[in-house]
Length: 74
Image (tube, rainbow, N blue to C red; front, side):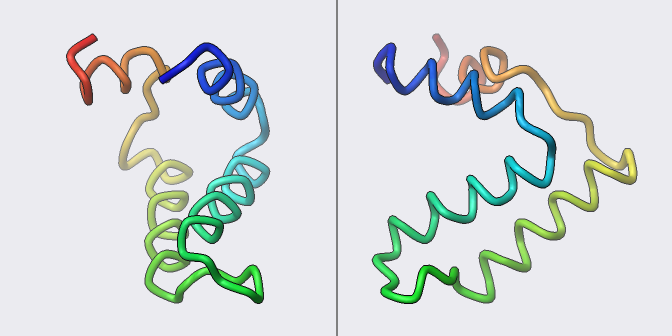
């Protein structure tokens, strides 16, 4: 990624969980090319389940730098 994307991600991570969810849904929707700005039911379900697991404590969030490192080996 580039510095601009890193900055946007860092700023997004400072949002409230509901705001981050809205941003994630909008980004996914933009990749799907939907005209009505709605995301597919499958993605909406997945995001809701992930949000619930975070809220319930079933999973713990990690800082973006750690997640990126896990994905890319940076």
